[in-house]
Length: 347
Ligand SMILES: [Cu+2]
Image (cartoon, rainbow, N blue to C red; front, side):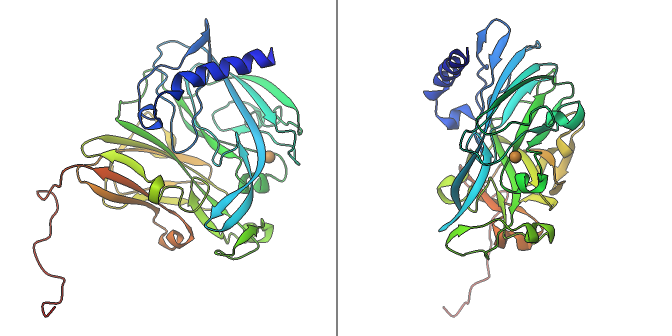
């Protein structure tokens, strides 16, 4: 039964394999049904987002998550022993519809050293299901849960000691689309801000070890988007074209800091504050994201160039809290241009 489930998952993934992630991240393709009334969720790693659910009915959705402990690069020349869901930090973006019944299949990898679980902020029930999802290494737990409230929600590990499990990377986002869906946009991306606390100072080469003391003192070594310094810089910049509408789902897991999320050179046309998809705000420069919260921002970019997104608690850019969106398109001097000045006239 288990192997048949995985086969089905691979078949569903194969449907999307031929598409570029570029297309897929904002495509309108429907998530595939594998049995009448059952869908295997199409999960995407950050910065990508599964396509809209595009359904006008409730159904059953199977979500496969696995906790893994693995070593990865946290900054150039520096490694960290991450704990993550499905082998990435943050974990994959999950997309379902209000009223759906979700069947979570949660595995803890056989080579894990710790028990792991998941607290879904989207779930109604004790511990956000974390108490019944506690899973030892090499084991699997299956639960069923109803998605009652629409919104964008954090999920994270809640095995003791909870701060350590969160600090090491066990978190992600789940979108419960409202029954009428979301406003259509051209591109959607997934960002998650978090801090990392290490014994060694930033810039130390080699393996950096987790520091509980620095976590307690709220002195992060790194403050990053999508799990590492530079995850959204250089070759990893987000991409857009002028006059497209872009949506960012931005989570903040902390574990300590509140984010003042800002995109330099753009104004958010629409902000779904704290992931509340019912009553958006408009024309916002900087929006707060509490620890354990989410914001959703929509904007149309008129100008080409590189636009930098930051936590506007601005010293944090030196700790990694920076990413970029590269926008292609014709220049717009009618919106912004230089007339004169600024240079030494004798040169
Ligand atoms: Cu855990």
